[in-house]
Length: 431
Ligand code: KE4
Image (cartoon, rainbow, N blue to C red; front, side):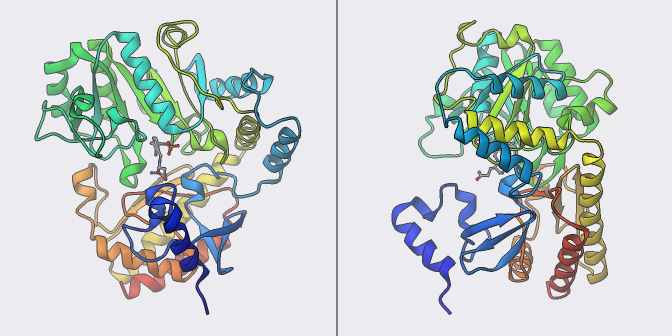
């Protein structure tokens, strides 16, 4: 039988670099042929051969309600009939902004944009504009979109500034970016002692979903907050992935439970707030946000910012996830998956550690949860790839890379979880 995924992949590669519009989709890390999605519904999608998969990517986070949620679909269809895009303000942008601010009290104002990269890039420019400083801190293993200044890997050591991770990024663009080790408090303190007064911001993924699933420890996060305050740098929370995904109040509400009064200065959001449509945002206190054009000197703009169809999708999504009981049910479902996988791995004698929060999870073929990038990368990559393909063959679709997180939606049933665990148990036995 002809494999339509393979046919489409070969055809795509003739006209689109690598056959994909975002590199991780090409299966380069795991090998094999990407599955071309024909359609999706609820917790599932069907590929070009008509094969059904239980979907644990959900567009890398946005599809928290599952695919084709009826209320969201109705809102999008209605909005589309009223017009696709105006380049002029609409009431629904206000409604979405108000909904976001309701659940993220650290923000008094928010600017809507079209992608997480755009939001992170703009937040960085805002932090630099608001402080008049150029230097920034990011952490190895955290990804904040592909803006030049953030495509940086660790330098040769502490206090040496980063080197570009991508061709096309001039060294002078990353000369102000200091890359530190996640969860390393002594190194953080040393960096602030050396550069604190020149730092515009520290940008961090509070739960690093781009290292699969690594939490910033509470003491580490507390020191990030204290040192930013002490030196006048802004704490920028990149919650593109964790925002409205790990909790209704996002990851910052999880840290506020352990650190009384905890708030970042700027928050970057995306994914869930667009419900699968191109929409992201960044926000913070009024005094910072009013530095943005047209009220302030920091320029930022976008043709499709606050797009009327995307805001309808996002607003309907936020409305659904704000309903009573939503988070208890989603968290329980995710926990059920993680516990089931852990038990299956233990039964098969496979080293395994996992963690989850709300509708986001991660697991490692390591006996203990790693706490930084170097540890994550000690994972047995070939073994992960065999697990990935073993699951894929059984119709379970997890991230095609060991450093990516996984996502459960409200549409995933306990039956889906049981089928997933059974599929994993079969693969663990021969891993
Ligand atoms: P986008 O520009 O892809 O919308 O967002 C960039 C971004 C920013 N910050 C964080 C914490 C993110 O996770 C992302 C994007 N996440 C990846 C998944 N690791 C998107 C998938 C992809 O690149 O295709």
